[in-house]
Length: 520
Image 1 (cartoon, rainbow, N blue to C red):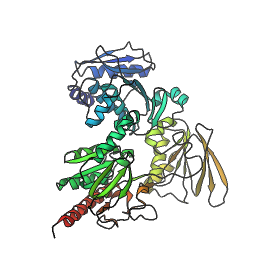
Image 2 (image 1 turned 45 degrees about the horizontal axis):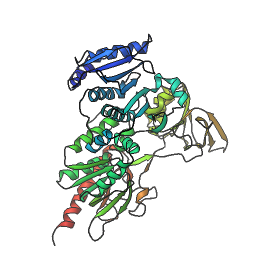
Image 3 (image 1 turned 135 degrees about the vertical axis):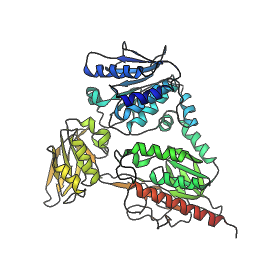
Image 4 (image 1 turned 45 degrees about the vertical axis):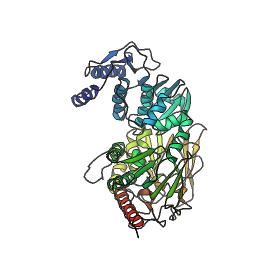
């Protein structure tokens, strides 16, 4: 089941298991059960502290739980956690086996402090790059706290259950039988939603921090680069973000980062965080900025956050990135995660054999249509302009596929549904004005990005598109406030461009710091 290289790596990791654990499988005579049994036996063969039992009585077959010997399994996988989820499996083995998780001390303490019983169920797909963050967070919580249990369900293997619950986006999380949330969430965010006091404690801790020399708002490539360059100068540096990695976390394949022929978004984000971790910098995650107050007589800018906390700094680098642009048509918000989605890699497997549409004919839209064509029954690409803007090589590949139609010069006017899920969409032929209806079950929106700058409207100069206006040194119109990355007017929204812009902004901030703090 597992190849030789994977077994060698696994053997090395399992040396960190401190307490004996057992894998308790619930299986039958089906092929997936046989695959699972073979995989578990391969795992157990790599360590004398891991054993396998096949007498499980879980609700789903095939599935297996991970437990310390003599204890009840609180971490369970329904399906085969391969692909992106294999790392989740390895970490679960280590954490249940007593190896300490790597996370903020405050988060780990908050997890251990949850004193009410909770059962989580996460529906995920093996091709989803966002799912492992949720699965690993909940597995860690279950491994640390006996009041918490978690089951990760491979959606494509339990289609009847997914259909019954109308799960049309992953990850989808249920808590104690009720819908808890959808999309990427880390342990801090999950704990914050369970423990209502966590947010106020975070706010108090933030407001009590000493002023930074440079505070970076945003954790994508631009923000990470800015924080690294600032920290290397030996000045007091902070980075605060809703999620470290930003939009990169939603990017599957990256093939244009110079000197790195191929990587994936989550891997790049992890590498950026590890790099920053080598310097003295305070990193605060899970925080949403709501206001920026320019420096007064004390020379300190102040940033307010949704939790009520506040941070101050002599210089601020704004690297808040961007989010998916929406169509702005009736039905789009109503059917978000009920057929309207933005991630073909995450949610594509949930539409196996179904008819879907991709909105947008740029590189992202055409790549999404090509990927989906191998998963779903039929793809219709709908492009507003009279020609696609994607690279020629992508267009040739798209038009070579038998189960793809392309509609040009079409304005999407409405997403249709039956109240619980998408049933189609309507579009207008821009040349004739005629209206048409497509019957389908999914709509993948790929029409570009919007900068996350609404909270800055009354503070710094923004362009007509809402981008932070910066000069060639990353300076805004407010002294001591700089901008970098996709949230700014810098052209070409690319990872390598954002990294350079973040570095430039940090160097400019350092230059501003030493000039304004120098004695007369």
